[in-house]
Image (cartoon, rainbow, N blue to C red; front, side):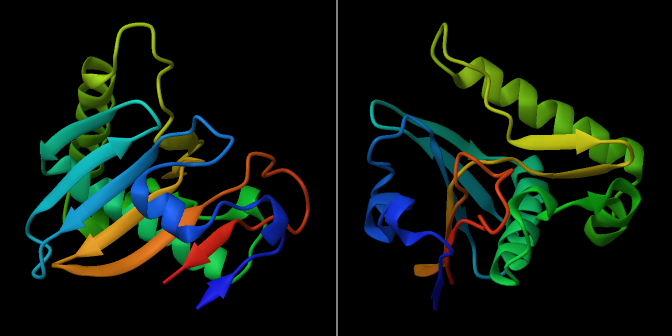
Length: 169
């Protein structure tokens, strides 16, 4: 099922799966999740590089945030409203203390900063506002087991009303 409020500006889903975004240098996060969801591997693709971030426990928290963003996009909420969740609620969903979730977020950002090529801009994979957070404005692809689960590609101009992004699930 594909929803798109402005399909003329959205990349094709096959391009997202390949990690290539026409006319864009935005990276695409590729989550590879085991069927039991005990293992989450993450790779970041752009037109020039693939960063293999391996399997880390903090990738699961990022996956949950990505799925929350996807659900809100499927509900066709405006882009600036998609995916926000209270930190305490997310910590409870993950079975963590909020302080431990903050440590995971720190580790995630640190791992990403260390893995990126020198001089590359730091990716904002998680956005924060007072007491809440969400998956950033980055495209992602989720594979669970060997099966495709979802693609998501938010538009660059999320502040425009009615721009919900391209979604396939």
